[in-house]
Length: 466
Ligand code: UDP
Ligand code: UDP
Image (cartoon, rainbow, N blue to C red):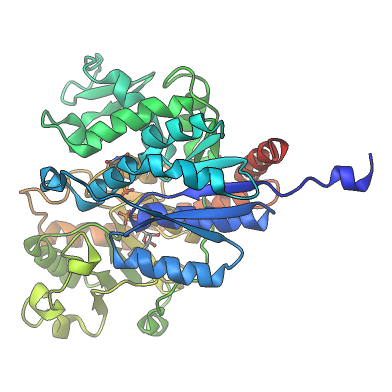
């Protein structure tokens, strides 16, 4: 065979993220990693974006990576927008993208060179797969949460209405997904609600349709989620699922648009608890005050990102007023509180950070794993209890399981928070385990690692179909 025959052309792959930083960030990391392996990438972004963080990140991203081609999909307005008034604005945005999915057909078929595949966010699966099917274009799903969550996601539609299995623990109700039982307390409440809601409808539809995708890629790795990955690939969750491939954790891009936090440089190694609930979780003022009390009485150093509104553009309250009189002054020797976007990738890798009080959005968990930072898990909504379960099971964190989902009537008291903060910051066992997980995470995506192999296999398939 001559050299020219050996040299396959670079496949061209389009990526379609969903809305919110938790979905955009893994797509950006994935795009860069594919491009590094010689894949030509078109990144389709949907407009308008809901958060300021997304629009700023995108413009920064495209100027940093000019070899990744941007393509814009302008969303149709939602005709019946008022019927979504009680819904989470991010779920409404998923719906807007889903209802505009047919606009993808001319966009995808006009791309040159022709595509080898489209990689779609899981929250868009049921409306995008018919489009790629009509174009005979392979469709891969990037699942941006844990494999544990994926087991629920793909089986929920089939198990709804099934009876809780007999279990020795009579106090808890279980949900059966294939061979696995998940405590109902861990399942996002809207899925168990009798009231129709977007989360439930979309997970039912997306989970069902995903069986028709050509492959499911997950931002996780074998060492931490072998059981779930094995069950998914052995047909123990649902039959006929395409291959599920672990390709994570995606390494950070190191190109954040915001400044780092110089205050951290003055703190002793491993002494600071970083407190953040991600990009789209609002906390009630009452709960914020209790959290403040807890952090203050824990005696621990902390960096705390406060959010009162789900959408960053609407989050205008003054910190002093939000936290109450004198709080900032009282803690100024050992605590920094901010209300703006922080460069979390950098915070997590800072040597002063020794713990993370987190809602367990999967990107936050992945970033903690990458940097070997122990987690105190306080899940607030969505997939976060499923992820907290993984965190605790692998030993890199503690889960305050008795604390309720966020946004409800029950407010967790400051004393309880202070106690758990003490438990995590002084825990040498968890610290050692988190360090090991960090090493395993880097091994997984390094040469010879399982996730690297998984990624290379997928790229080979795309090369062949090119
Ligand atoms: N993030 C950040 N700065 C902030 C808040 C969030 O850099 O002030 C990043 C964080 O590092 C992560 C993403 O935003 O990559 C949030 O995703 P995650 O899955 O953790 O939670 P979500 O925001 O979707 O609930
Ligand atoms: N999800 C979905 N449709 C929805 C809402 C959520 O498919 O209308 C999926 C979402 O992609 C994620 C899970 O359900 O896997 C949890 O949702 P959430 O958006 O709360 O998680 P996050 O974006 O913070 O990771």
